[in-house]
Image 1 (cartoon, helix red, strand yellow):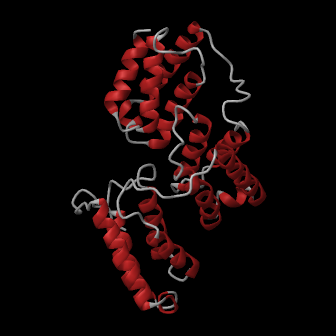
Image 2 (cartoon, one colour; image 1 turned 180 degrees about the vertical axis):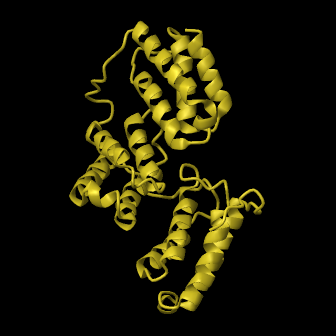
Image 3 (spheres, helix red, strand yellow; image 1 turned 45 degrees about the vertical axis):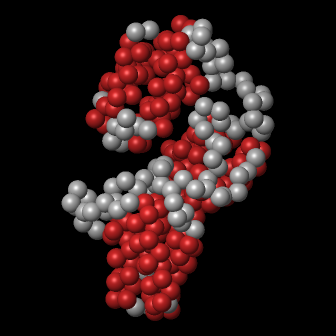
Length: 295
């Protein structure tokens, strides 16, 4: 697919959903027996569906995961129209699209259920092996999609209160976002799942730093941010999360940091969390550096 995103009309969320529903009707009208055997028919449908989605610059896996999954499968079919299972999955995903962004009727798990879910898929990852998962897209997406989607749909997982699960979800989405070849991400994901506390807020043995150690920690990552540069960190999610996660997580785990007693470190932790959630926010990166410089 050719690039040209800047000139292509950008649809609203509702318009994109309508677009997907229309082409799902067309797929069913043509039938999968035809579309999995006739290249001309398949490409005519898949191209019309996939290209318009591909050109929507605002569809990202963090904010619009439903649409992102539809786009992934539509592009996959465009490149491999004979895969009937992918057509069926595409139709299922389109049927499940929320009519309005923000409405979430997905079943909500308890913390224990979410941990059990993660542990199950960690076992599956190890059973399949990273040699397979980093080279076979179908195998990788089959695992990562099953792991990440239920986590994505849990509205209660936020980075402040459930940071362990939030980090698992972040790495799982990163892998699902066509980074399945990155072995280090898979290994980190497994490490994070292994470290999940069985019960929320119990057995939290994360090392507690002194104030001086926390300051040193912040200064170190401020240097790294400047070394990487904000042009990179505000455009490259993988680079950004590598920095923001390393800065934010240890601070988040310091039980002694509170706004009344340590307003400086507390503010740094807040802005580190902001850029961890939205790496494109240049102003927050700049504010973060300003606060660290004042320590």
